[in-house]
Image (cartoon, rainbow, N blue to C red; front, top):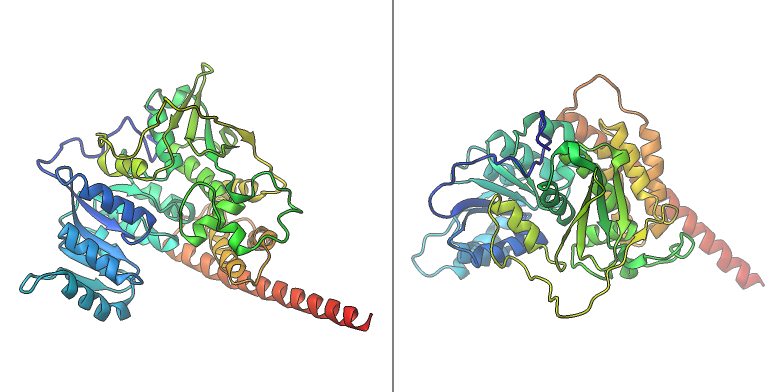
Length: 434
């Protein structure tokens, strides 16, 4: 991976080779979510290595945000919801002692972007742990400000890949997804010319081994029962449909500049091997740890150094079995569709992602069957068509495509729900007459 131009993520390159004295200043975006809370835990256990200067969150968990702010002694706290400010101010007052100065509060939809930007000077590394395409603007702000970007917000690349590539400097992005952190570490063993294939592992989610027919009647509770990882509801459903793996294939292509036909998905139920790199000499390097996101987070915020005891290691005195299975593309068509939209590029990935988010919400609300998620997303992608060639992608293009995709997905979902309700009513009537 040493050739020029360098890919977005390259373990051989260090964006900021001059290490500052003392702890590294961090801004944590999405601090009350799964990535954010584990990052806070990691920082609290390593105060000599890291210092958090700013936290951002949506605003739904102000008590936790206030506790984090007090324990980390941050300078600034940001919330996306302006109506959460009074409750946050009260929570902070309860956490801090009498006479102690409270952190600065900034609020609004651009609050996280402000923390990531050059307007907030006390920052070396931005950890973007926001979920969803709203994380794109903070990603672009961090890159433009010259921050090292520890990227857990995959949507930044999915919906805005060309925008990110236009701003990122060599070595500036360190991936935090477990799969991409695994590839990042394995790729350190060779040059880009040595790489034959990237192998992205998938747990298979709660429905591994089921056919498409078996999935017709699964419930939201079934889909939320992930066998390995504890995640938010949208990400957990994405794991059940394997949409998350499709997004990761697009992300791997963008991060490492490897063609789609050289990125493979394999099902690995134990989630011990987080991904693998196959080299041209036939060797395959796998990165393996027990399932724990603190390891990838530590790579993201600490690279090129490793953080001792960031996450648990294997106990090799105990027997274990590691299994690998081919992906069932009929039951889980999401990976193939993701490859398709990734190759289309332009606004197609944004349409795919936005339509999926709407369909997942509809499924969780009982308005769409499980198989209907990908059926609806497929239709939205088909209606969107092939993006115009020869034009530069802009943020406005992404937002316009997302708005259309969400609206169209809601229309199709409403039609599906109406049809299902009518079918149920007709069946009930027929049974009553019989």
